[in-house]
Image (cartoon, rainbow, N blue to C red):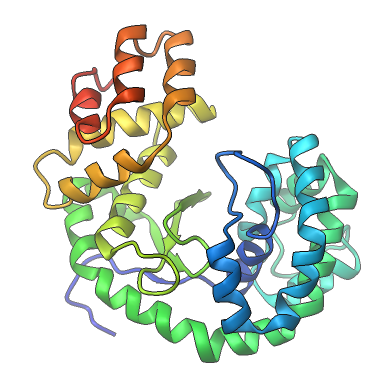
Length: 293
């Protein structure tokens, strides 16, 4: 292992990857936590085979509709609830059992709002778990490891922007693509570059910084945490070599709804919210004009 850099990413565990794989088939509409992505589906069919995708393709519409109707946002924590495919298969057989390698409180949160839908998804994942693990290890994990190597210089720059990142575990996955996730305690994930998504290692570093800013926000309420992260990272990254990658990421976001809700909550005035919603190339400058508080 290369020990040149103080912070290094590693591939997410297979069980985490499998849970993200399942969530990527749930068509939940424009929910900000949605992982539904046809480009990933094409990659997955090639990498894992039809037997790891067909059932999820068939059930994803129904399960996604249930998830959206019941607002089962806690189900997005499933990737952090199960440590191994063996544990996943065991808990799919008996979702209420005490199983080694299962974070019971997190899984109970996933099950609470829609037990039938969550158990259905667990069963779909268990059916393909053995084949998925074999193909992940042989076909996908090596590519993620290469992405971890390529991320090291950008991650070192991210650490300079936010030294507190040294307290966090950083993982790359195939399923997340350009997106990021933050799980408790202190675990940040984003998509590996060089697979199915065209994003760069610098983009991955920006996503790690954003998820870190969300995770360390004073409030855990979604709107306030996201708004805090957008504003504080725009300030923190201004003199970093990641500044341009950050600006490109901001330009790609649909921020109208978030900005208008932030204005309603008094986090920004209406003129500032409109400017951020309508801006593209200078979005970071608009965010930097706001107070970090």
